[in-house]
Amino acid sequence: MSPVSFSPASFSPVTTDERAQALLCQTPLPLPPIARCDAHHREMANRSAGDADLQRLQRRRKNVIRVGIGGLLLLVLLSRSVLPMDSPAHDGVEAIGLAAIAICIFGRGWCSLYIGGRKKTELVTTGPYSKCRNPLYLFSIIGAFGIGAQTGSLVIAVLFAILCWLVFRAVVLREEAHLAARFGVAFTRYKNLVPRFRPTWYRWRDEADLVCRPSLFLTTTRDALWFLMAIPVFEGIKILQDHGWIVPVIHVP
Image (cartoon, rainbow, N blue to C red):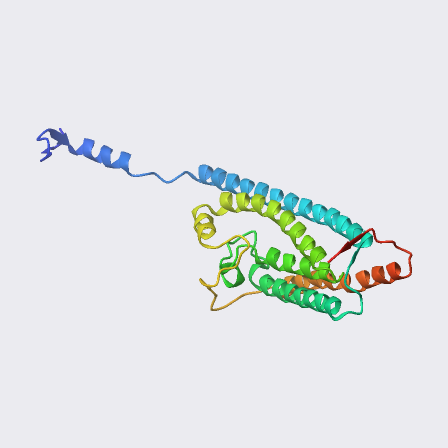
């Protein structure tokens, strides 16, 4: 016969076997190897599906950007700044645009030092990502403003920046859903503290040691150099307009 003990709370007899069974029920048993393997495979499958969705989203973003560039180029062909080409005001607008392009190139390279090779595996919240959740897109918007400013028109420069912002905003909303599913509470906390595009002037956080991938840094910087192509392209359009080969139908400030 099993020994009998008494519970002080209810004074009801509880056998040692029953107590051991109760403790056994309260202690979670480890999953068998097959179950752990199945859980791991499910997690990897979900992660692969998420990566595939993100890649499709990035391809769609690039296609939308190409269409937008085509539309903006058509706008540049059919419009012209009211400022004379040799005026100080026209040159000043172009100089502001050139500075914006330089900021874009530098900023995108800076961001790539932190995000390069880590975007799909980690939630990066340091460096420029401690000031803004999407600094790469923010610097691209600044670069788009700089491209538009090479026409000598601030209106076209602002239109370029607004269209770029609209494209990136649609992309970011989908990317945030992907990040929320992958990183859960950590991303929600980060989202509540750091703005989407508008940089904060506080909460700077950095890393003591930063591991970067030079190839990704060089690739990002090289891609940003394409913003400089706007200078000869738009100058060529102005020359064609001066010779009457292209007739602008819109004059904007």
